[in-house]
Length: 427
Image 1 (tube, helix red, strand yellow):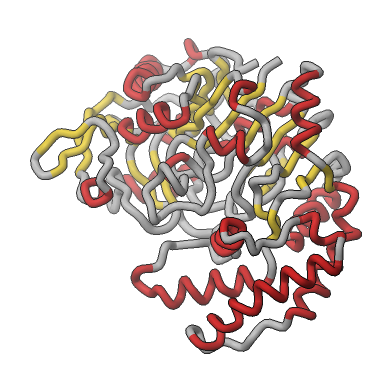
Image 2 (tube, rainbow, N blue to C red; image 1 turned 90 degrees about the vertical axis):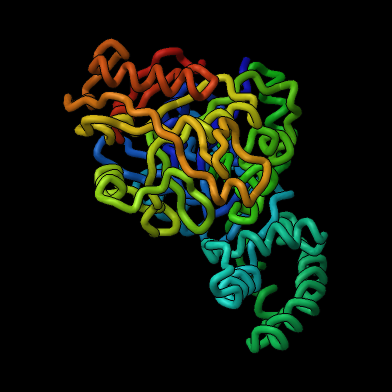
């Protein structure tokens, strides 16, 4: 049975929650493999809208086991708040599994994240201020706190004290902030142990056993390809690997077990935070996309920057992820435009460039080269098949498919769970 990776093929916010939820009823496990509560998913079920920040989208699908993998960084306060909010709305959260090897976001991580971003001023990265980057930095520096450390007070105290020996020097001498007391941090973290203990286990073993038993496992990435710390628009990226390779390291499931890699593409392009964005719009079209598309970050609450579809980054996502399929979302938002520009290449220093520039400076100076495609005015939200779409909408989808390098197997024509056209089922 298949193991599938589902990830963002742009800068995040492509509608991964809708895609994961669509598959949730057909899969046995949904796994978050990287990121933290800086990645938001909006899922609409009937007349109910759910905003998920840390939990896998599969938690809304009865019969599906949601998993937080070892590659995720976990803020226990956010986790418990999100679980409580879902329980109050009648959602069963008892099946959640959390890797004991996942790293914890502590109070000092969020403090350092915020003061560092303020200190950078105009050079700031545009982080969410939730401690994600500092937590991953501690993980790589081998001074991180893992979920399993909550259950051994002696180890937890040693690790917190060692971490604060250095961090308090930075806070006091560089940022003129008060030192953080180790006892206070340890006490807070120990308070979470009993409340999340029943969820914690060896998720790597469980997932591999599930695949051995013929179960279907879906790996869900946060953010998007262009925010990958290795393959994105560095340094304006996240601190982990949302790309397909991250699914293996972030879950403990080997690459030979992955059968399908699905990239989520918005029918136009958005991004949150700082960094280059060749097709960004600063006119009425950009504001119209933002308004109709409801382009406000689920987790950040910030307005998203909006632009036309960029086929260059779509091709790049196909290449670095080994994409087998695309799920095209928010096609309905483009209804009403007489003509729709699509970026097919860049102009850099007078040269036409059709692949993502390797050089960071070139990408910053890239200017989009557009091809104009005819638009449509018909309401497409009730379309149930590809043939139900207006001819110009069909042509738009086919053009994007050809430019992007992988088949478009599903199309979102509205925010609802049932407002999706499936051309080629993922399972």
